[in-house]
Amino acid sequence: MTTTPMEAECKFRVSNAVETRLRLERFGAVFLRREEHRDTYLRHPSRDFRETDEALRIREIDGETLITYKGPRLAGPIKIRPEIELPMVSGTMDDWLKIWGHLGFVVALMVPKTREVYALEHCSRSVTVTLDHVESIGYFVEIERIVFEKSEIELAQQDIQEIGRQLHLSQIEPRSYLGLLLAKQSKQKAPVHE
Image 1: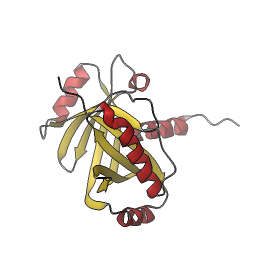
Image 2 (image 1 turned 90 degrees about the vertical axis):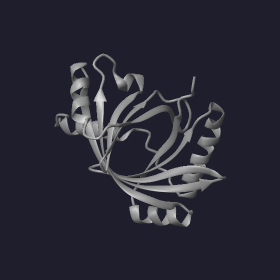
Image 3 (image 1 turned 45 degrees about the horizontal axis):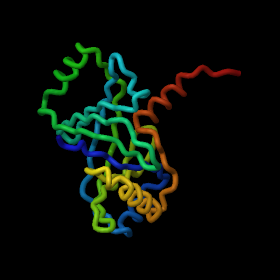
Image 4 (image 1 turned 135 degrees about the vertical axis):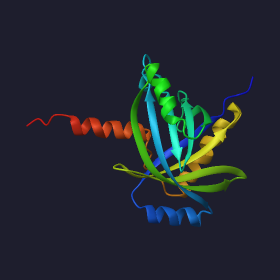
């Protein structure tokens, strides 16, 4: 039996994307690519993913499509959760959505974003840093390491926290982009009381 890889990540709000790019460059991060993402999140018919802390997402990246399951987070200062990601055959997304629709799944929300991907070596360990721009909610930096063994979790947390300090990132955002957008939508729909 193989171990499910775990994603260790922390998201930070940033107010100045230009300054953030300069800090990444000074810190030795190597710019790899710019990606256009369209993330479609699905809602389970009989299980509330907000309560179980799970997510099922279809991500379209510049013509490539991936399906991702994210499991519940482990306790700790950094978000660590099981993640399984598989490629989807090109051109089949609509048919998959039909299948899931017949099973009761519905689209919760679609989140478009632009992502700049950077590679970074920290203490001889590979870390991915992204600068994301999400329409209507702003810029964010995500620092991520993939962990394959439970023994690596604490070290991954330390790496991410140290990189965040070095990059002068202090405004941690624990919510997902989906959560942020749903909260914004709910605030906009709330009745105004005088």
